[in-house]
Image (cartoon, rainbow, N blue to C red; front, side, top):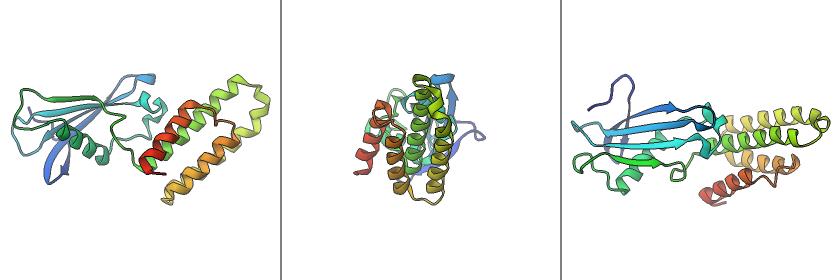
Amino acid sequence: MAFPKKKSRKIEVNGNPYYWICSRSGEYSEFRNNISVMAANITNSKKIFANIDYASYDFNLFQCFPISPYIIKQIIELGIQKGYDPLNGDSDLNLGEVSDAIILNQETKLKILLNHVTKAYQESKFDKDYSMFKNNDQYVEDITTQVNTYIENEEWMSGFKYLEKMIVDLDLAENTQIIGFIERVRREESL
């Protein structure tokens, strides 16, 4: 069965055309992208199915974590590595959850890290005396503005280093989610 033309997008990977569709499902911390891919030039092509779970990153990223052709290309390549053949095989290939298998682009990594920092800051306000945070709310807004400026100017590395410093300034260096994500970025970017 072919994908509806109005809802599908086309991408070329290794010289082969594919159609792909992404739908979102779930609610609150269960947001998920459901991705379907099929060869564009083969009738009744076998499909690749994959999911990207927002909870793997942070459910507040619903707006800033779009599924781009960059991510779809990685999903197709992963499917091919796992034996995807649009003509042969008994059934479609379901890759399941692929959040850990894909490599995010640098801008998305910076947005995710910023989101982790602002979320951790907001949560820390509930654990401590609120009066000490009144001036820090503006400080976090300034950090967000500065990071977005780095993103707009395509200065990803400067934004990353700046945000690392701000994590220490905001006393969030012990946050395991933030530290884990920084370690992942350092690994993927060979920093």
